[in-house]
Length: 264
Ligand SMILES: C[S@@+](CC[C@H](N)C(=O)[O-])C[C@H]1O[C@@H](n2cnc3c(N)ncnc32)[C@H](O)[C@@H]1O
Image 1 (spheres, helix red, strand yellow):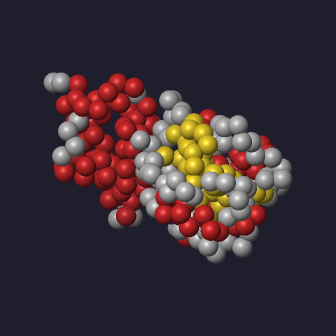
Image 2: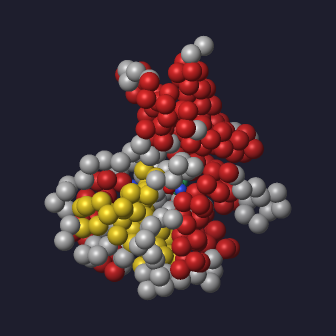
């Protein structure tokens, strides 16, 4: 079998397995979390394997393949939400396991803003903070900044607050089910991080232009090429409004980061 055919076969396997897990979860049947964790770890390794970038460039973009890619992106993102919820629920239990996926994310958070460091005077907002708000906790702990998280999912809000209560009571972290327009603190925000799995992140970026202060710095997590199997890719922005100040590529990681600022 040719390498590219094997690559496609793997994509079909991941597609089938993600769908199976989502089905089990939505039918309230027990999801095997060890199996889900292994699946996400394998998928992360698959995405960051450099050989797969080559195979990606050789696949023919038929309608069937484009649909497969979109399904993989959407369904892997739902599986991340499921595992984040699981991790929040088992927090503090003895058998709590940290998947490689989360370790991978931790490495990225360290370098999120490149040379534009956050300090204790900063106010940081994360769009799509999730049920296990690792980014909020790490940023608040390491910098002393005031940190805000927003999410559209009630359960992610509830569990996110539960995790912060358990691990970050001493930190300045607030989680709200609000849009960027509804956040009263939005004008004072200095740094904004977008979760890579927020599908409409570029629409929200457009809204932010009028809502935020002049110096706001945006860290947009994204994945192009083979990484778009796990993340929403980078899009063109209105160049009269936003400009790219830095691109932070993480070869070992499932997503990359691009920094935007307002055009002066
Ligand atoms: C599971 S977390 C994943 C975090 C991951 N570390 C990343 O960077 O993608 C993504 C969260 O984004 C939330 N989300 C999706 N669309 C959103 C939106 N338009 N606004 C706010 N949160 C959103 C989801 O509910 C989910 O909890």
